[in-house]
Image (tube, rainbow, N blue to C red; front, side, top):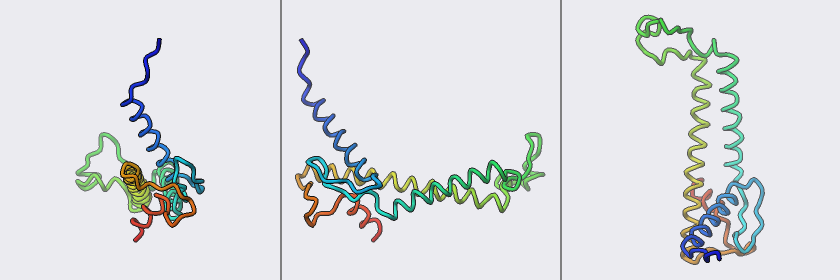
Length: 157
């Protein structure tokens, strides 16, 4: 006969399911309807959506520049060349002035995505804390706003 499930394991699985649900609600591009498990969030704030689209465009354009315009982005340098002679002793001189534009664009997009990931983790953690404390409301039409809006208000103020 099968053993009954372990209470601790069930509790951890339920906690993990709640985390996935909160993360999914926050990342949703469309409003999420309220249910018994969800407080009903408005999905991603328009600023985050714009940031995602801009990051996609910046990363795609930088990659395109590196692939198609590589000779304009980088100085021709062979393995047998000397950094002291060809690059004036500075390895960063390998990138041309034009090449710095896609490099900075890619860096900016990466920093945005890292920031978003950190905010998402904080939002999930904050929501889980609120659930544990019993202050997690599921009233879609009440004055309570979704977790995503609260986090966005904190970040954007």
